[in-house]
Image 1: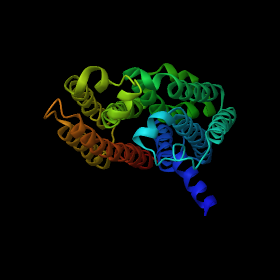
Image 2: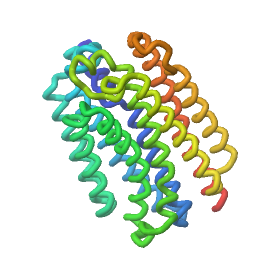
Image 3: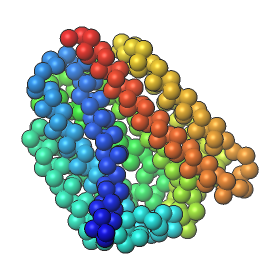
Image 4: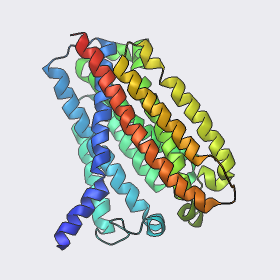
Length: 311
């Protein structure tokens, strides 16, 4: 029975459901590059995807583990049932596992090419730095973790550039357009991170984590959420001009509705009632998590539809 608990602890620590989303995000980058760079849909492209998704999955999993390692004091207050605070998995084992995952992902990236290797190493370093230092610096930490999430899509694009030697495409408008899904993901993750700061308000305040809501209060934080949500909704329209069809449109509308619903949940009622805000923050974060998953499917199915239609 202890081994079963430990295995379940590792599964929870690795966030395998989030790792699966990372693999899908990488697929978006690959499909986007097929569309914008006119790469043939053949065996070579699938090998690129398999390698790229393995790299992003390993590095993402390493990021989740090292994040929990450095979050032990906060999770002891907010989430004492998690593997590290509960003692199911030792701190030393978690740190070793994260380093193995980071090194493994970065080493595998060298098989793809130089740009992919640099991006993989940069992402691993960014995740480590975020967990160790920037997570407690509020908005800058939110930006870093959002960037790391969006880089899963960028990595798919860069892997295709590397594998097929399309380095001249890096300075083209098509390369910029291929990164629109990454920008969409960045904004959506940033929204979720800020909302997560509301959910974790009590523990963050005790341990001096300078999230937006801790430093500026709920009213100003809500204003930032409104601005980011407006940008996100505007960005969601852009792929329609690239030819993405009805499947993308319908799912993108669902994402936008969920974002608006999350803001409705969080609308300020009583600025002094932070206990209520924490509860509603948890609810809104779950809604945005669904929005992120549906957003991935919107781009994935949208690009797949147009790429397959062209071949």
